[in-house]
Amino acid sequence: MHALAYLVTPLLFQKMPPQVVWDQAHYLYDEKWTPEVDNMFINLLVDHAIAGQFWVGANNSHSIEVIQWIICTHFQKDFTLLDCNRHVKKVQKRHCVFDWPVHLAGVLYDVSTNTLIGAPFIWDHICMEQPFAYAYMTHGDPK
Image (cartoon, rainbow, N blue to C red; front, side, top):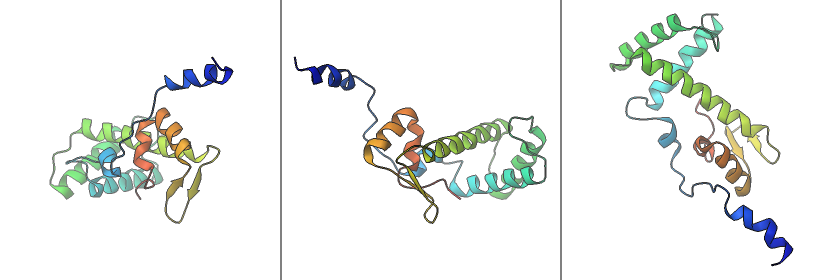
């Protein structure tokens, strides 16, 4: 067997990235958490953080209860406190997943379009490490 085959063969058995890429909405939203609800939720979190009422990693139950009441009232939907706490965690994960590739060699962040740019092999690596990153292959983090 050729010496190169010993190097390449193990690569064939490594985890491969999925080949299907859905629209960003598939990863970020559902029938309850629409882009409009998500946008208001994030804006309210930011407002509470600016006002010193929300801190990452702290017990933010009061802020989340207030935000829950606002979005329930505004959208006429039934969001539980558990829904809102889960969504805070999802937003934090989105931030980490979007922020991580920005610092990789070969990835560029285009501020004007709010997108990440990288070669296909780089996206393969990113998506093997963080499958949720597929949400950012064609669009940046929603504003």
